[in-house]
Image (tube, rainbow, N blue to C red; front, side, top):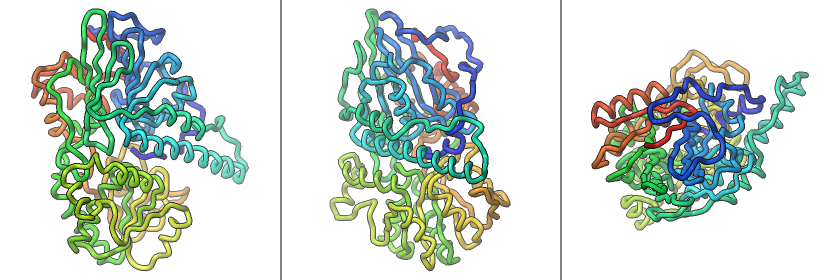
Length: 508
């Protein structure tokens, strides 16, 4: 998910929202109170984000007078962004520890705010996820602070006063405090995270360091295994290992981002990318690629490097215009032990998958601006992936009206984002307060997705040899989540449920 998607509306004071959206008691015990932890005899699950929506992943386990949080992501859908400014539904001071599946903004983006509100426990995650989370949270705070200054200056210049008190969601100091709580754990190694509560992290194949988490809760009466999918990756993707699969779990929380559709085959990506690059270069335009800094940018470098080595595309300059993507690429270099066998083989031959001649890393704003002075065609990979902030907007302004240029999307574009507007090929769009005609070629390669599609999601969950007691379908638009839940029930006979925001379920 893109880092700066929330910024435009992020500085207004939070709106008063209904705390529970249509939730109603169910047979397994919906609770609506958020007091002190429950007694040792029951286990409760609180659905605090990515529930009937895609972003804001956050779930809380309440058992043995302990509270363990799994993820604390930022809400990025336009209609849900005000939730980021609400006080956390459960007092952060009462949360003992946290588990982080991976370092995307919609999974770790509210952690500094949680810390600022009083959370002081350990945040358990993998080594690579910890490093990427530090980059993501630090950059998020910086963007908020810089944009606040810019907005204040703009309003002053226009002689306007803000409607609402303006403040960032959290500061750089909050982000630093959050990173100090990160604790590295090894894959496949069980760690005690609370009284009678253990966690084991398993490869998810989604981004570097991303994991599924199996949480085992032992109460006075019994032991239950709760499997958190995090974001499920794909099989046979470049660089990363395949997702882990599981024999058994009592309860499963599974993502459903693409639970109603199928991706294009992975093997078609190089051929499609080759054609798009060559067609754009022949026209003499630039290839502009909005890309997420984590994983997607590195996947693009991998494919471009391969195509160049095989002489299937010309030796055109490739600009990675994202300080964050550059930092994350360094994390890739430092964690080669997490690569799949094919990538390790390339490394042993001296062919690094994210480095090649002609790749230019643009760290400063001056370097970014200099791209516009380059004569001839170029490939520009810039953030943010959904075009709602970052350097990509400047490159769009300089290329969107040029019929020789191409804008290539390689990731999910959420409803309400600038990227979603562009991909629908409107006659014109609004950039920096000015209308721009859309004359560039607009295209997309779906196979780049780091999320499993419907059949891959089914492949992952059908590895269970015995039906879990219940499957909670999360991390998907409500309609998509319900469609996938019905699909699981029809195909596998699973008892499924799509939870509402802030719903609480007592596990039987």
